[in-house]
Length: 248
Image (cartoon, rainbow, N blue to C red; front, side):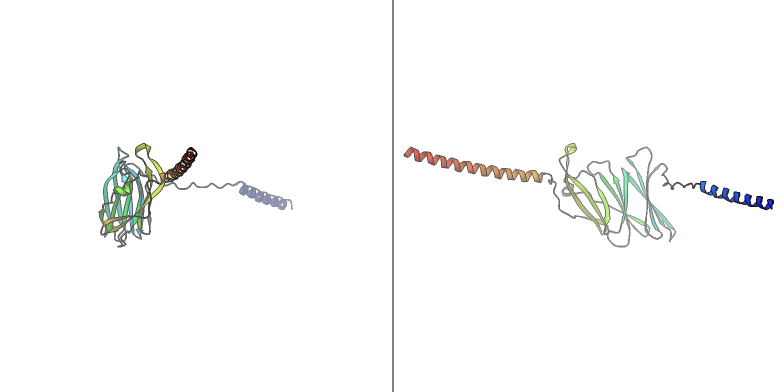
């Protein structure tokens, strides 16, 4: 009887110890996996998959300078087991990469945006259309004199309805004295016959900030004109009264 009691007590103690052990047990959370860092001489990487089995890895690389280097476009056709490389010189650092089919011919365009050192251009676009694993270089047009009016960089690019949209703020003045007007210019780029087309989507004015001042100036001129006319009428009436008195 005593042995049974001792055995029962030992069993109860084991159960209690097991429960208390479970209560003090802590879970260790695993840290989130970090994005792998690029090793020199590579500086930028982005992968774009245009369709299953068709992907493009865009990289920039170079040693000794952060303002110059080269870019690589590595095209992987895993379904056809074909791999091609496109490269070129790079002015500035890559900001982003875009994929589109602006001429709707089924051939993807890869557009590389880089921040240029040239303060008259500010932005460089390196464009290629890929057809049957062959890269066709496209010449991206510079801003003409009309589109450049008030331009001082700050470009924002994005793809909308298969077209490349570019928008940037408009400034008044030159050099360090240039001030933003609050207006933006928006351009749309398309592709026709391997040549870019460009059109402005909305009207804008490089003198937006001056309009209130100009309107105020016009109103002031009108008010001054009214005052002058009133003074002339008053002066004319006064002179007529003096003449009448003199005759009397």
